[in-house]
Length: 344
Image (cartoon, rainbow, N blue to C red):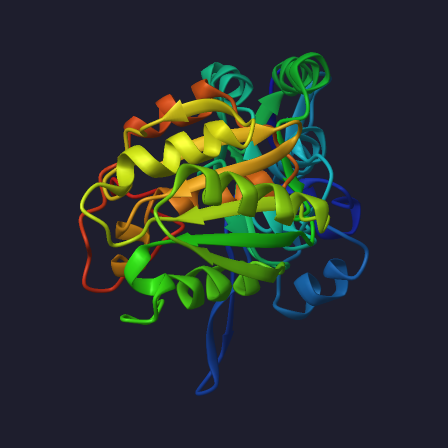
């Protein structure tokens, strides 16, 4: 099938699609478009069209196998939307996908690329793995021409069925967090601990809370004991913050290992945050944070924390792939998380 253009009396145009803009002129008051090209004519449009002096109009006659941009946009949105995602009514063919809750946005990038390989249709999204708020627009769909073959939209629906979900939001858990702060100078009270409050604020901001902080000297066994003490309290995550000693890098990982944790990755391809350590005690995450977390607004910690709160088990591959986009350029106005660091 194709699309044929024809002239019909306004009264017979119900459900047909306008071929051209219809302008309305009220002298001295209004001059503009009353109905846009591509508009699907409804019952209440007919008297309005007659009022502005249109008796006959040019319309497209829908042929078998072709669909209008509004229907196409909505079908694509419905197919791509997973849990925690709603969508708007089509407006001139465009449909917005909206987060229904705060959480970690997840995009199936491979499937998204497959969809966008199909000619004449598109889906655009924000970056995967960023925290989004309830009500934020996270994607949009539309077709390029005014009409598209139904078979193309079916192809997209099939990709979404086979590869799905395409776009979804993981809600963030409310976790109880324990902090171990290492540093002989902090322990002895010579200098105050600045690190704890930075971590507490980040944890609070994302909807979890710190239930205990233990300050220790730079000693492997004290670090290990403190980690185990926090685990006995029932924390869901342990954060070890580096001390001020000459070489805390050796002590913190050693203490974390001594506690019995399995190290997933020591080091991350992220600046700031290269000295980051990711480990697990069973399924409880233990994070060794480098000093930069105290001084820099955004670091590797901000990239990993939401993934943990979304219930993901962090694997080495999750950390290695942060290298692309892992350079923070310290923008004067930081727009994290939309940048994932290396500016889009």
